[in-house]
Length: 98
Image 1: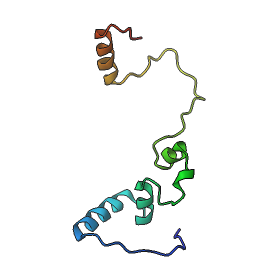
Image 2: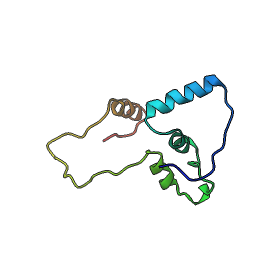
Image 3: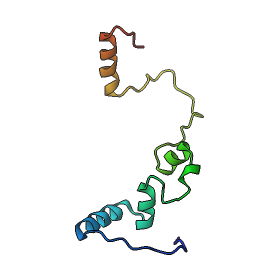
Image 4: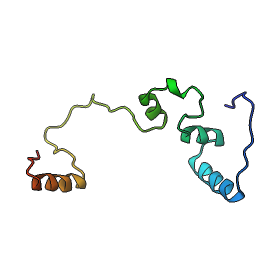
């Protein structure tokens, strides 16, 4: 859906334009949507009214965790490989790791 607002033109080098268009094409969204997504203010002049939660959600950095599924007590907790590295470091510092 196109905005009915006036449009503006900016001048950039052809190399920057080509790189930008390649990036935008790969994302599957319009140029306007891509710019709004990556601008800190989302392309809005009223950025002061946006909460940090709204900003993170708009950028796709937060989501919903479904806690309605019961935890299977028989399955061990998932621990990524970095967990053991951090646990070893903490133990060397004298801290007890669960």
